[in-house]
Each structure stands twice: as structure tokens, then as C-alpha cells.
Amino acid sequence: MVLLNPASAYVIAAILCVIVGTYIIAIWRKMSFTAATVIANIVIFIIYMAPMNDDIFRDVVTTLGFNNSSLQTGEQLWGMFTHMYIHASFLHVFFNMFILFIMGIHFEDRVGFKWMAIVYWGTGVLGGGLVAGFLTLPDIVIGIGASGAISGVLGAFAIMYPRDRVPMVIIFIILPRVQVALGALVFILFQTFLLLFAVQLPGMGNVNYLAHLTGARVGVAFGYIMMKKGVEAPKPGAKLGRKLDNLDYSPLGELAYHPANKERYEALLKEDIPEVKEVLLEDLVSRLRCPDCSSILTLKGTTVRCEGCAWKADLRKGRAG
Ligand SMILES: [Zn+2]
Image 1 (tube, protein in one colour):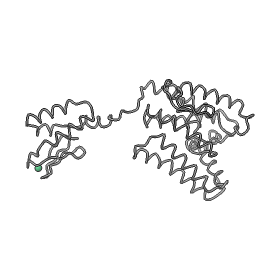
Image 2 (cartoon, helix red, strand yellow; image 1 turned 60 degrees about the horizontal axis):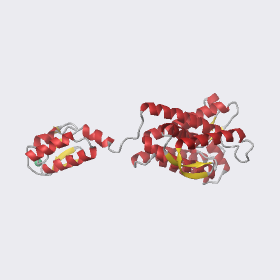
Image 3 (tube, protein in one colour; image 1 turned 45 degrees about the vertical axis):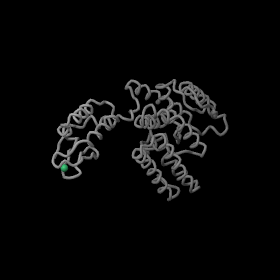
Image 4 (cartoon, protein in one colour; image 1 turned 120 degrees about the horizontal axis):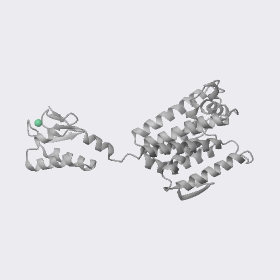
């Protein structure tokens, strides 16, 4: 690829860093995938629009957009992924991110971060990229924008939770509580209409409505598979529960010789609710004394330590030492 402006290389590198960096920060700070994606798209849009240079914009679109001739040449296939993060105009990025935000947050509540990412990236790559790219051949089309992925989320949402009510934009009107199934149906009809008449509508011929429709169809397929798998968002306490279930509490049992503590120890072993079990564990440790020096014990992570000597027990291994 030949760049029209040498500075474009830095802009493209910065865009790739934002894509990777945003999701690393999202996982680290426990942000939602939806919010991270909205932020990434806005930051990326600012990065390549801020220089106000047509050559840089063109370089970004030809390098990171998805040129469907890639399917014939095998070159720049990364565009199937990166095109989701490039938008043509402020309105393009604004409407896409607005719809993603009001709808994606609800879907992500239902299925969790991991499956939201799988649906969003999967339908964007397959529906908005691969399938739309094949269907538009032999015409050469450069696809950009998150529309295919957002349509994919809507498709999966509609098939999995058709009765959920979410805010939605239907034909440029914001409705606060629309059943997902109804919203998706109107969306599909509207997009089909635009696909058929897009050429006649001034200013709308350049949006890839086909990518929206293929994205939505692939999204329906994803949703169907997820229903078969029984996908649900992980419950808040699930991770803590797994951690507590994998601990070996026997070093505490050996120290719980006082009858009251013995009862507390038995209650701890029987407890099923992770948050309660954690409290019982902390309470029991605070009541036990070091077997070597009788000082108080403290719990740090999964290790019980003596405040007075070097005695400690790692509950992950069930060993005292
Ligand atoms: Zn001690």
C-alpha cells in the first residue's frame, strides 16, 4: 500500500493502539464492552479527523477500511476487522455509537462482556465484512463503519430476548421503550427499503445498507447458537463463589477447637452464597489464634497469617507452615 501522506503511518499506528488499548483498560477497570467500543470509536474518529487532511483520511480508509477485492486478492484482509472502527463523517459515527450505546448496554446486561464481544466482533467481521463483501462483488466497495456489527447485536438481541424493552431509534425518532423484536423488524424493513431505493435518495447512497442486513442475519444466527448453548451473563458472585469453593479450609478446622468456633467452621463449610461465605471466613479467621504463639490471625487474599510470628496457612493448598 502506498500512503498519500507519510504522517498517515503514525495516525494508523495510533488507531491500532487505541483499539487494543481500550479493551485492555476495559477488562482491567471492569468497564462494559459497549462503553469501551463507543469510547474507542470516538477517540479514533478524532485522531484521523483532527489533522483535517484529506490525504490522511483517504489513507486511513484505504488501509483500515474493508475493500471487498481483498476477498479475491487475499491482501489487507485485516480490513474485515478494522473497518468497524472507521467512520465517514461525524453523523455516521454519532448515530452508530448512539444506537450501539442505548441498545448494547441492555444486551450486554443479558449476556455479559465476553459474549457481547463475540457477537459484536463476530457479526462485524462475518456479516459486515465477509458476507457483505462477497455479495457486493464484482463491484469494488470499501466498507467502513460499525453498522454491520451493531446490526448483528440487534439481530442476536431480537432472537434471544424479543420481549425485552429498550430505547431505540426508528426512522430517526427516539422511542424510550420498544420491544426488541418489533424494533428489529422495523429496522430490517427500513434497511431493505433503503437498499432498494438508496440510489434515488440523495446523500444516502454511500452507506452500505447491505452490510446492515447481512450483519443482522449473522447476528440472528449467533443468537440462535447462544440460545442453544444457554448463554447468560455471569452472576456477580460467580467468580468469588468459584474461588471460595476451591479453597481448602482444613487448616482453620484444626484451629477451631473452641465449640463456638467449631460451629462457625461448620457453618462456613456449608454456606453456598459466596458473599456470605466470604464474611463467615473473615469472621472465623478474626476469632482464631496462632497455634505457635497465640497471636491474632489475619486473612490476606487466600493466606492466613499470624501477626506475631512467621506462622501462615495458604488455603489454596490447605497447608499450614
Ligand atoms: Zn504466631
